[in-house]
Image 1 (cartoon, rainbow, N blue to C red):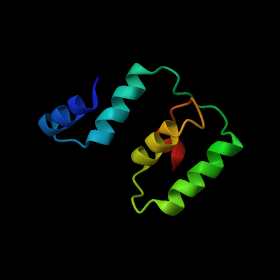
Image 2: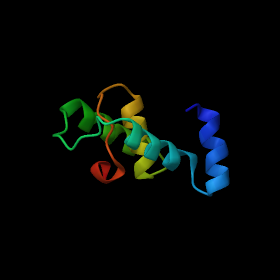
Image 3: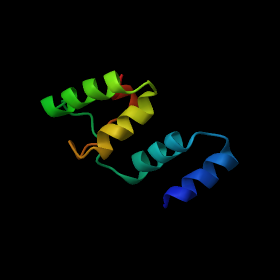
Length: 80
């Protein structure tokens, strides 16, 4: 899916783009796993939480994944 698809579908469904994209990634990417955190992931998450005015867990999980520190897509629950 392209980024603009999430915009259109989120408008139709009445949910945020980031939540819709996260759900898509979770279903489309089977490498979401419940495995121990790496120190680099911990450090980056702490930095993201300090610098982000937005404490939406789903968006923080996406930023963590997009950073490239880990190939694991964490869920919002794992980030909390």
